[in-house]
Length: 256
Image 1 (cartoon, rainbow, N blue to C red):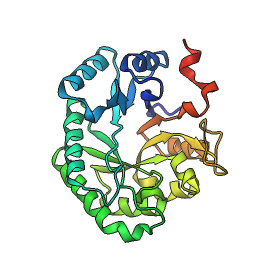
Image 2: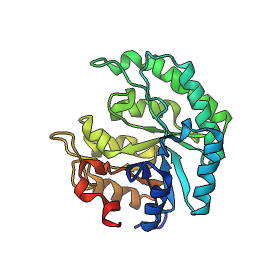
Image 3: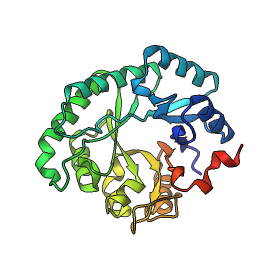
Image 4: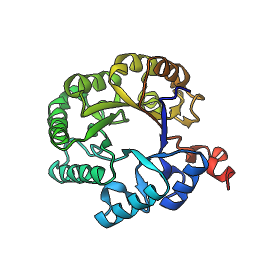
């Protein structure tokens, strides 16, 4: 593997409690975590005291964050924005406490069966507010393609990147989410390659949308990763296998 590739992962898929997460990361010789849930809640909803406790424990075990796996932007586009923006500001504050300025985020759920173009104005207005604050506070927003949001498909992700891409706004590429949205991941990758700084390693089947081990679905994981390595990608590969979908492969159980 390219020596510049850094592995991370969603350790809350191993266990809810941080101690078990870290124990298993160390068994896998992994030194990064994309922290989403820890000890009962998403990181961005913990108190300052709890954040300091988490940071101290990670430091003691030589584990660093690759990104905050936040749920920012995972509200309806017609939902009130101000309370959510306060959570966004809180997430950036926590990112500084955790010495990691990368924050995973989304581009808002749309009403079902609606044309994304109809909501482009309010979506872009909210993303612009996110980016303005990120610019002022040294944060890097990582937009993830996700089912049901404005940026569900590659064409809308491209519009987002054409508008906001830069030092403080970049793309996450999630194979499985594109498959589940009916996208050809090879075509999506070609469209978005120049904007991608972070990868979620997760695969799915087109036929039924089921999540499967990476390389066993229709995400063209092998081909895309090979091209990334060949073209000098130096970002994170974050493992998000959704192992609860195939419990026979739960790697942490095999290591007990």
